[in-house]
Image (tube, rainbow, N blue to C red; front, side):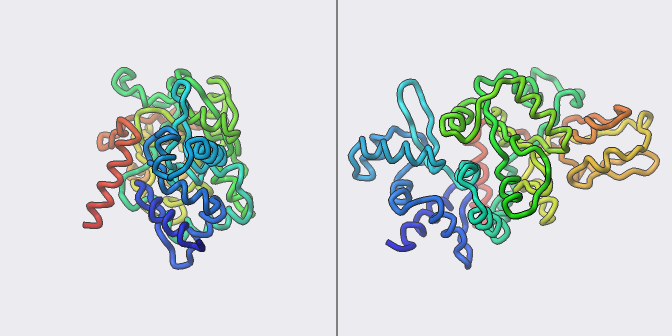
Length: 355
């Protein structure tokens, strides 16, 4: 069989909104060979991106339904497929490389795989993440620094309230920081800091990728992350499915901005912008160290470069004078109603660029 099945698998993964482009080195094939056996790769090729029962997938694969169910369940436990429970039935769908196979490999990650991921990011994936110009993540500050936002009109802007309302919550290790640590790099920011909600949380809990927590612990994790200077970012949709707490040195999205000098709009939807009350500002400079993207300078008072500002609120939560708040940008892009809408927008943008 050789590489043929992995080439076809790469081509299939490349049809997703965040694709899986080829490199001259073929490092992407080495990643797939590490994650998938040939048989698993063959089965993945007939799994739809939309959730289906095992019997439907078995019919396309020419497999006995029980055999297919066993393989699909095992693959989903390994993080190679997404699995969701609806009533008494299990449904499976193909996962993209990101958010998907990469994040789901957090428990399998070792030095070799970390090196493959890093090489692939540098050769191709940073560009792929930003290729459409449609940001995959939205940035949300903590509620207390948000000003002038109508809760009824913009409930998704209030992070703490969404966490308290979540049905199920899980926390997992940050794979970006784990990857960096395995490569002898990285930072000392909290490792167990990636939050999942609802069906995504159930998948992490059932597969042993993360542990179940309550809203109180989730809020404590957010507060610890904020103290550590991490940016709270979730999928760029109104529904809360995850919150990554991102550092500028390890995070795949923030690194594109901070280390590769790429446009923030390819990675992060900046809904908010920091605003400084000149009368209250003491020019102490605490915001300089807190800003992850160098959007702040200090003269007589702190000055925010709105074009660079992520609206993360880290400057506001650390200001000893309480001189900084964040407000909705006038030129903001509203998050998408659903994750599917986000994916379709990315595909349309990439198709337009290719036409």
